[in-house]
Length: 590
Image 1 (spheres, rainbow, N blue to C red):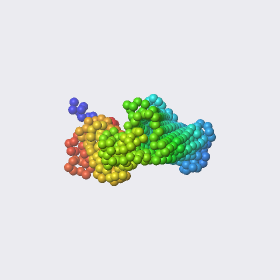
Image 2 (image 1 turned 30 degrees about the vertical axis):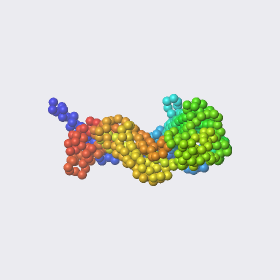
Image 3 (image 1 turned 90 degrees about the horizontal axis):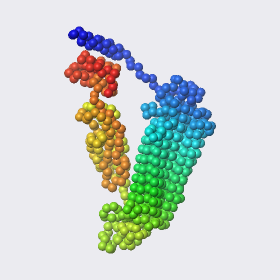
Image 4 (image 1 turned 60 degrees about the vertical axis):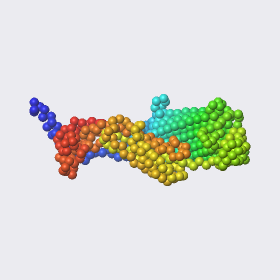
């Protein structure tokens, strides 16, 4: 019986030592790097380069300047790169799509850069539910649709696409068309002369930022969508610049709009935020809410328009801290609200030198702050005094005579209202790994920014799920600067599972923009350690055998090659017993 039980162990030791010897003296063979295939030097056409059997995932197809009359189908996860976007031209001759993308993954995204893409039905058409496509640095013009990204409802959206630093010209229907999609980035594009510059439908958690949109019918058009950010865009001479319909939780912030018939309009859209925009010098409407409730219109500038702020059939909105000046009509409202139980709250606004400060029907709104001491709005035409008349407090900055001003404001301000834009934000949360074993320490970097004009002191909290990991204090962070905070998560006593991390900055006094005070990062998978995984890459394989071989024979008290991760039975010596334990798990994954 003794020989029977011992023989497998001896056999295993012999095989393992032989394997270690071979591995130790053999150079590992790595996968070949991505290849670059040139058009027309290696292949006469772009499609021929893509279709070639030598072209693999990750390869680069580098296209020299010329006009290529093709309908390109990308059915491999490659990088399609033009040498010069002005002179490297793909032309569909008005037949079909210029480029059709049929595959792309987050691990190996298709990237298209450096081309003029013209004269197609679609400049770039991404087929149903394909995502993670990167379109950067192209000229896309004279198509019916510039780019079309369409998911596969109701279950499979197209996600994670990047459209960056492109020029869209004269795409007759839509510049960028996205439907049934999540988590896209559309930034730094110039879009002009389309019926719709951008048209988003059923598209959520997408950021539209730093684009210039000019001479479109609809500049940014959003329908049936939620939780998108429209930030820092410039709209010039569009019919409708920023238009959201049947949408909620859209942040419209820091945009500049002029020359448009409608600057910013919400239609049947609730719980959105319109913040810090400059909507001026428009021939008709500046900001217009129709059939829209519970929105916040805060700290915007509306100047030199025909209509400043317009409410139609809209209720329970908060209108705060705006400067509405030199318009024909300052604020206009009708049927807003229809039900007097849901008034709009209008306070701390500056109405300055509008021809008609108010144009209204008999709707009843609340023209003061929600809490004591009540404060109303500043009116450039208010002639009353702050003298304590009518039993009120003298010298408190609130007018006491000739009230209610314009039959609405019982608490008119004597001086223009100025709200400092005190604002702190979480810019990013970055973890050292997305997978860890229990007992490891995971490191986090949290980047915070002071986006306001004053030095700020505030607390930042890092959480996993609902458990607080650590809280740090940021002290006297200078205006408009950012800093990094470093956190450590000790997992020694944490059960295995999936943990979602978030960082939150406590609001500073008078801060109104709270949306960017929190940021959620990805999920970390925490697992029970896999015995034999010496390099902690979640698989026991040849790499672990190599490390084991290097440490073989060492002890915790002697030997420069000691590796505690290779002491699998924790007896302070690395020997055949540890090799046996490694062999039992060889090939397993965590």
